[in-house]
Length: 340
Image (cartoon, rainbow, N blue to C red):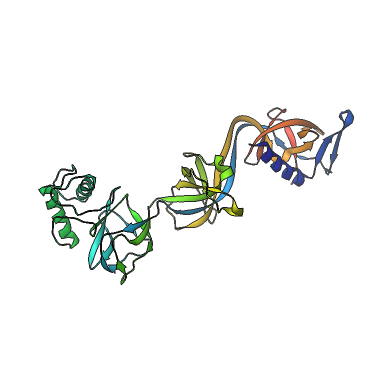
């Protein structure tokens, strides 16, 4: 880890330990604040992982508005938190359902025999997935497509016209969860105006990460999320924003970080703590950070040899998990730590 961070951690450890060693002239060592034999810890060899904790919010992914071509009084609206899947009703207008179908293009026109294009293919894919057919899924609206549409309309309580428009179908990337009802029952739906705000059904943790700490978040990296109550779940950094935005804590610029988590618990949205891995050092020597002493020109550790102790200068490296990388001592060496 950066030396400045290590130095800050060391300063805290020295203050807690109550011992400062200063190498004096002639090689004599003066120690202050230690009145009993120190407790000890071992110099250990292994991997050192630097994890920093940041604040985040457990939420749902992919928030967006739902717009429909339906026009009229809303006669049914879902509750907030409702999950809507393929073939199910997003909202009812003038007593008729607006149906969710999966796709990555808007329903912008009325589809009927002779129409061709991506939107036709999406309609056919959804009809087939819902069990209507037979027909060829090829992006061409044929008589077979019209027959499948009529069967679907009959089941949905719609006039069997064999044509489909934006008042009947909304394409969306997948199943959704209703976050906000913008057009409640008794309200009015208008073409192009939002009727719902929805999200995906996948859980994510959103972090507004200070831009100068962006190196902590790398797509695909592991993260640990601590939920209210102390439960921990594992996550993966799914997306890191490329643009820094103002408005973070203390006015700092931040980048958006999304962390995918495997969580299906009772919390819909909640503040969480996120552990991000900033640096990993493999096969290094380390000591507890409280074992470090401030010596002239750097840092040292108090090596314990039987009833005798001596301060040995060390070079410090990465910091993580309450330990700090050191060189200048051997694995298995006993070093003094604050008693307690």
